[in-house]
Length: 114
Image 1 (cartoon, helix red, strand yellow):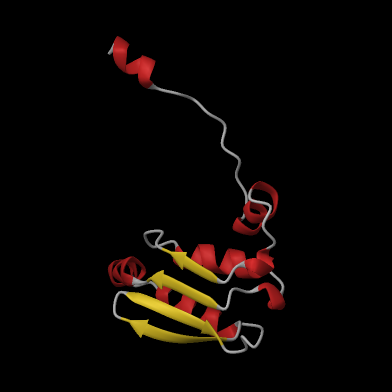
Image 2 (cartoon, one colour):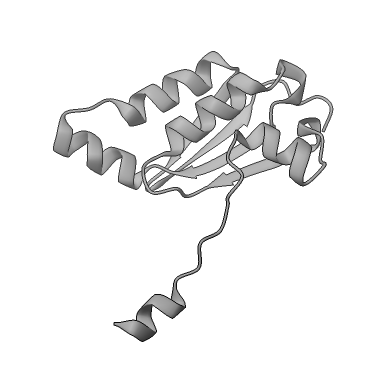
């Protein structure tokens, strides 16, 4: 027991949106995001919607690839609509979706700058 307590480290963690993290911590303008790859165990919709709501239309990543397996499994267990909500949200922001089994590939319909 005594040795275990010596192994615990308490540290402050900066919290915020992905857009804020990119701008303040990485110092990367959000307009430089060429591809967003996510695998966050069922929280893809929350991450995607939060990030895209923070960005201007011209700053949206042209390619988003994310795992949908856990979202779909959670929807089946809880009679939820998270996976459908994610797809609907992405389409509303101008993305074309390709279902790749356990993954979804979202391509921005207007990616003329790439």
